[in-house]
Length: 332
Image (cartoon, one colour):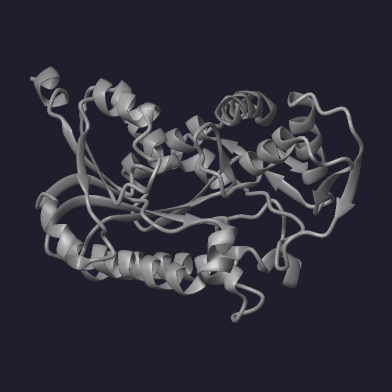
């Protein structure tokens, strides 16, 4: 009887699951045949690549294509799921600076449309993916502790600056999902991702951008923007496992968890490590970074460790070797 119960597949929806983290979660879930997985996404150009198709094929994942900033698209979804991972959003500093109005419009619509669908559906539990950007200004402006725990006050330093539009929508999402969850008795969990990286992470992040710059071979000296700033990078397999642990823990309802790594390094160390992997032999020079970029960012993951059993395994340099190799092959 116990075996029969265990074999009942959990129905999982990955909303925005074609992205980097979504596919990482799908891979992890797919290794356990106890899940019936659906990925719903707008499918931006390039997302249905060979890696994505392989995962979908190997794990018999159902695909739903739609622009979910349009509420009418939700009719494509089933009326009930055991677990819903709400991952859909526009991300990337460049996108925020170039199209801040679209970041606000699309991310806000995705949040509200999903909540409206949620209260009309039968969902066992939903997880909202948030970001360390929510407290990006707190550590600098108020000298808050680093590594930073979940209880950190959320803030941005300049409301009119376009780079913070993403952070604003994530703060909204955290508040909205926790509020709706309590109002309509729906279990909700929030995870804040902290510099997740790995192969196929897109091209709007620091590591792919570095590989592209080194691959071009046009810079000598190679400029290091914000060389003395620090970040803590977390490999995708650890992030995926941590997310699933947060979703499936019975005591995680209406809780917030930092998913990341406590290994803090400077941007200078990151850049020079990528340079070595790219066989760069030239000189380096320091340069100013993006306005609004914080000096330090490193999560306190004690709560995730103690309550979820989360324990990242992949050392940042090990993950960086695989990531740089993937992007080098791409640009080659």
